[in-house]
Image 1 (tube, rainbow, N blue to C red):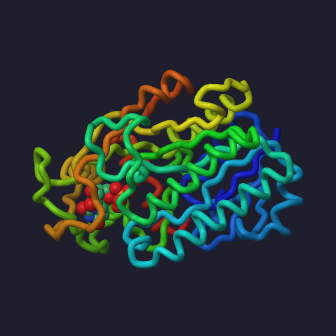
Image 2: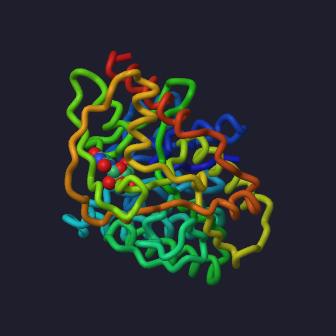
Length: 327
Ligand code: UDP
């Protein structure tokens, strides 16, 4: 069985591609390399193209059995400043991909969604039934595509799993790939950099939240745990259950939250150096607490996160040292 991993040269897509191959699937990557990296695609067949390029996509889609779609823009702040870019790619481009897939006979689709579809949740932990009221264009663009998948499953029988990631972090333990973003805005790589001599100081985005230590709480999930969940989502689609009307939404998190200060402590435990920091203002669009209820992933996919925050930080540190040494 052959899987097209769209956005396979990106952070989560490249990890999922390896997990799929490890589980016996044939994998083809499709990526326009706008935010992906050729380095993360090494060892795989890579077709370079945009998700909106139907002519490029159709022959590739005709040779695969299922699609995993990771090719989204994913910076909340950027989506507020440049919503046009987000709606163009995450909605228009993604719909073009979906229609091309449907027209070439694809009936299994796994989508990288996000906990940003929930906005500011009323209850923690967050279940899949929580209202979906995104508070930024990024979340809105992902929710739009989720709605399209639900409608397509009802109307056309295209079955899908929508995986709502919490905070993806960490690196593959084999050391070949890890988190690469340009620019890097995520807490763990920035905190690791701030614990080195040459790295910039970390700015803490708000210490006046209604949380025990005043900083935001997030549910950090190891990228290889996410990758494993994608394989299970595909296996679920292969089994052909008809739960949730053919389009299933699943949270992917650990169920445990960590504050920004706790993450910094975890970084200091791994690097043995203090994280140089300064207190800053709140970042617009940041909910105070986001923690998953991961029970449905366990029940339906048989999946739970295996790796801890310490595992996340130590794998990210190994990868960062390797990247900065140029190897
Ligand atoms: N954060 C921070 N300083 C930074 C980057 C992030 O204090 O330089 C905080 C951010 O406000 C949030 C948490 O760390 O509460 C995780 O942010 P990240 O950007 O890694 O992921 P997000 O939650 O935006 O998906």
